[in-house]
Image 1: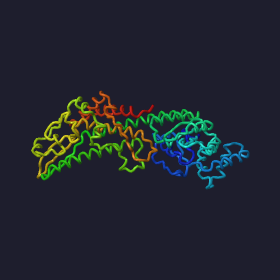
Image 2 (image 1 turned 180 degrees about the vertical axis):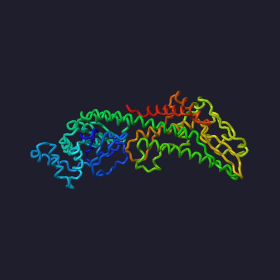
Image 3 (image 1 turned 90 degrees about the vertical axis):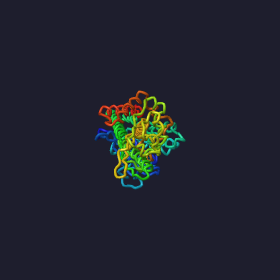
Image 4 (image 1 turned 180 degrees about the horizontal axis):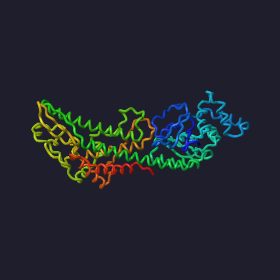
Length: 468
């Protein structure tokens, strides 16, 4: 091969998942994928690059159309050409502009003329038939390094045993693959198989695997930094509202609603940045539906799944004070609103558990020309900060494991266990709360607190995005 990186032609019968495999292995959302046969009309190369270096190239090809006719032609011209490779070259030259063999020529050119290795894709949810034998025999004539990937499209049926028996006679390596479940760990494991296809590129492929592993670790670190930045922003966020003299109760209720919406919007923006880190920024998914289908940020369900248990909150000590400015009692005398007992008092740990209507510090800043100035924030609820953190962690783990072959809206299926207790041990939770307590203070975090938070988040992500 002229390049130092391996090149693969992904070939097979139409509609067996070739394009999905190319998209997944190159982390490329732009690869055209459809359930309709014939979506891939031309061979197209997709390079997987890291920091300007090409690790490998995948060539998405049209499906075989007339393999039996091609094989008959090859056999009839073999004696004149003298070798299988030259016979294939002669076939391509004779049919390069023949519309009847357009797709077949397109898939053979990268192998015969450009030295690509072969990845043959089959659907093991369909039974093996002798019609596939002509395809495999043609590929054997190419005399190129080859592997077969077993794609299990319909999980209700499995004919892998019969397929494997036949494929062993044609291909050096046979591996199962689900392009829609290609996690970082599975991606790295597949690189091991690729390395053994050809001794000439084994060293380069193993070096590429090491770079890929480093790349995934960097994505985890960058995600941890983004989560830390999100927590710094949301943990110190304040918003001011002018409250008119008339209908103060409704105005304060509207202010709290807008404050919550601002927090939720900043969370969505942070998640979008994390998605971009994992190369999911250009998906065909509509932007408004790309947000994870999590419970609403301020819902009780979100608190149950992402927050801490009542006894955990109480056990970790009382929540920092949420004292309200003098005169607020008089301003809202008789109005509990959505704010409830948060007005005119200090929230303790048990009180923090009562709900999200008490999440933020409430300050009455003054009166001017018949208007009251109300400041909401920063977040004071210990549980709310843990909810925001766990939602960010859960989103990151989900997007990291999301295959680039996916074209549907991101759907996150939550287990019913509390993630706070599932992902964070007691020591880690206490350390996080120590940092949250500092964050809630007026000055916020210093550099060392931010660094420590990144370290903690990185460890949690590494534990849930395994690479080996």
